[in-house]
Amino acid sequence: MLERMNVILDGFLDHLSHYLTTDLPSIMAALIIVLGAHLIGVALRWLFYRGFKGLAMDKFLRQSGFVFMLAPSGRLRATRLVAETAYWCTLLTGVLLALRVFESDILMQLVQRFIFLLPKLLSAGLVLLVGAWLSRYLSRSTLVWAVNEGLPTARH
Image (tube, rainbow, N blue to C red; front, top):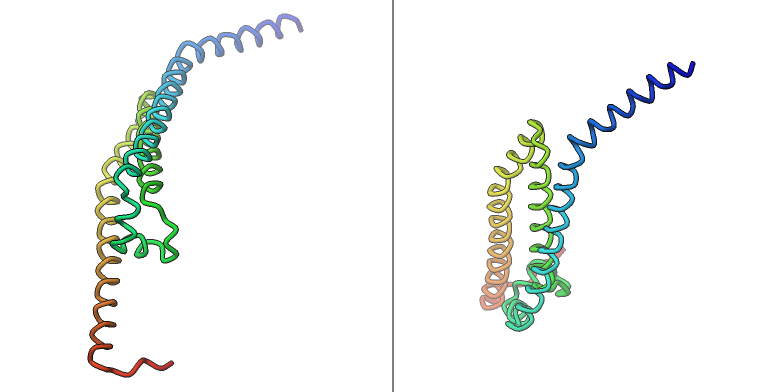
């Protein structure tokens, strides 16, 4: 019985030492990369908050009507939006870099597909933003035209 326990314990210790020598350095490197990305993201967020407040970007976007296009309540702040976007993009980049440390084929393909998907996501977001702005502009122009022409108001 004791011999069987020793064999099991020796097998367990062999597996543990194998995992500690092969996987622990990769896990530690991934954690360091994610922690570094988090610190860089926090620094970028702080810089964007400072930079945009100095430029009075919120006031400019509120006066231009861009903020009301995205959030009709007007409570959206461009400074916060840009700063948080910079933070989360930096953190996402750090996580993707950390996943590449493990050198698994499946993880490499996942990271590669996500990286190839990013330009499509950005262009789709830009198309949506331009479409929303254009629809607001055309609806306002149509309303002004209708009022200037003296058209009766629409009835439900």
